[in-house]
Length: 273
Image (spheres, rainbow, N blue to C red):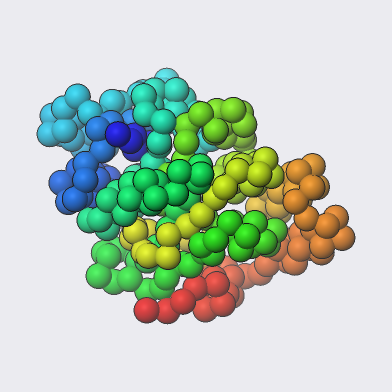
């Protein structure tokens, strides 16, 4: 038994949400027994109609948690986590598409690795449709490699992650960290010595259309990088000198023109398919 946790806000595309639900419910070799969908504030008529359609199709397993106002991803996920009745919670974004055997593979991994409390998998990135996949975003698979990788970059593809609810709540859940709520949480899990991992297989198609990578720039992102630096120092996950140097490098990239930043993401940080 496992729960799927999603958060939806008003800027999402109804067709993308429809494809997401199809991949979770209709096309999986193993279905979840619970889907928790948090509405992060009012989402508008079209998205509401899409949600209502899937409520009728799925029935009891789909629980919709409406919030009166937009509170941000971290707080929305914390609220949703309270409603998850299973110990294992699988994350997903409302515009991504699971491969048909995602849950089967992850459930099998849980059975074979009882000491792991948090793990994800690899993703194929696409613009509009999965068959237009442009690149693989790879992350390390072993605990040792993940811990080392986490010093420089986020070591998990957040939309593929499965974790134990009790561990996440013990650590205080998601914290407000603009654009990096997930990275923040993963660092706190790793710092406590919990065993983590990633599957070597691709388990999900991630939608990155409309120049998403190229928009990850500006002063707000630099402020978020500074918060990340402070967290690493607090958790003693990285040598302070190395952490400061990396902060300068990462902040420099946040100041690059959008077209150049997009090329860096797509050529240096991804594997073409």
